[in-house]
Length: 220
Ligand SMILES: *[C@@H]1O[C@H](CO)[C@@H](O)[C@H](O)[C@H]1NC(C)=O
Ligand SMILES: *[C@@H]1O[C@H](CO)[C@@H](O)[C@H](O)[C@H]1NC(C)=O
Image (cartoon, rainbow, N blue to C red; front, side):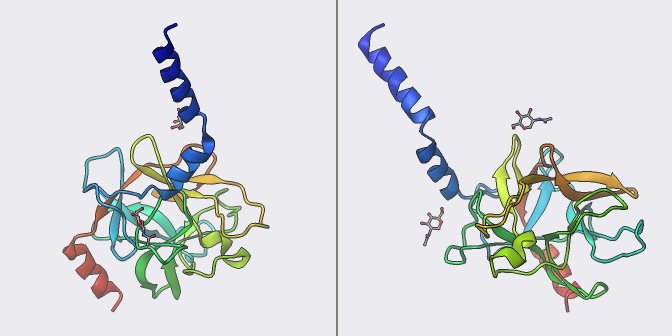
């Protein structure tokens, strides 16, 4: 083997097995929207399925009735006019840029008048009727720690686009399992909950003025 090839191989080996440099880079990497711009905590986005026609559908909220309790509502795949944009607030509020693999609060704007709750996402306790850990409304923003553990999500890269995970780092002494967020068809609705399979893939599209006006009217 000639010496320059050996050097190249050595460098490749060095860089591909240095976990410190890889994880440091991953922590700093911003999440990008469909325009290739950094995701910001001061904007609204439509969270759309990564593998369908761009602009088709997004997220909203649905009630299920198996337990006869329509609240909290569950984060669901949705279409206009029920589409809701999301905001994403990183735990580190010093930077408006949303980064991969960092704790974030996610929510729909406004409040849920029917359930008298926030529209901030959280992981609900295990639902014995459906057998799922649903993603529901009624969470809160900020106050990282054991009491808010179920309000924190992360955005990770997926094979196509991004996925959401529940894998909070806001409490060092808490023991939590990491799960992706995936979709389930239940009561003829497509609802999101924790999964031990690969999570659903999404892209983030800037919400248009039309969507913002609809939401503005809803929350007035
Ligand atoms: C905020 O994040 C962006 C993108 O990663 C980075 O370029 C910038 O330096 C950060 N700003 C601060 C104040 O940390
Ligand atoms: C899950 O994701 C991993 C990494 O992207 C991939 O290698 C694997 O094939 C996926 N599994 C399924 C069932 O899609």
